[in-house]
Length: 264
Image 1 (cartoon, rainbow, N blue to C red):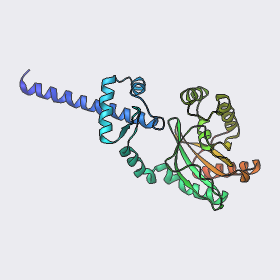
Image 2: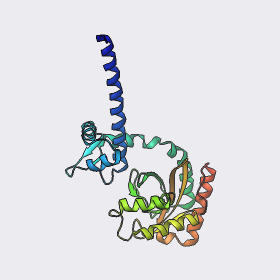
Image 3: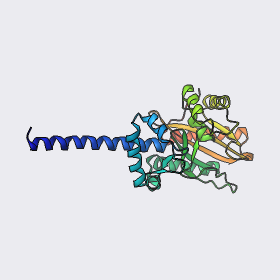
């Protein structure tokens, strides 16, 4: 093999290795993002990806240097400021938000209460928008960009209802230490069963005292779900009004081209 051929072969190998490093770095970034709220140790990242420890550490160090990942004093990795700024910069142009916002405005007008749009982000419910109704007492229990474990709140419970029973058990095993003490697996299963039977989720005092909510999930793309919810002070949420709100949400979802869940 002459010098020119060896150089071409080395250049090709470098490109392949470079592309592999990029793919692995993206894989790590996505994994850290899905576990941003709790943070991840190097050991847990290695166990989840199968990437050897030295390579994972080198790639994470590069991501930390760019600001896409942050590493705190407890050696936990989370998304860095640069990654968050990239995400926030796109929030106002999320395709699902553009399609859902007219529906949310109509829901806020009809119910006079606060309407939330939430998507699933790993084990979390991620609020991407809300619309306020005209009722003077607001139930602002979620902020745009806020993350909350699935099963907490009506939207999170509606999203939890899209998981299989096995997935719910795995979710509980992973997150039991971070869930409220009274959120047992049995209680979560009971609430999910009710949501599946009704076609919508209801919560009382689960997020904040004196606040109730109604949440409905809908399929965005095959296997990918979002949820809308209406939150209000508990005095505005007797059973008959909850049923009416759920019916209004079904109407608006269908009018907007989304298919709400059927009753199980």
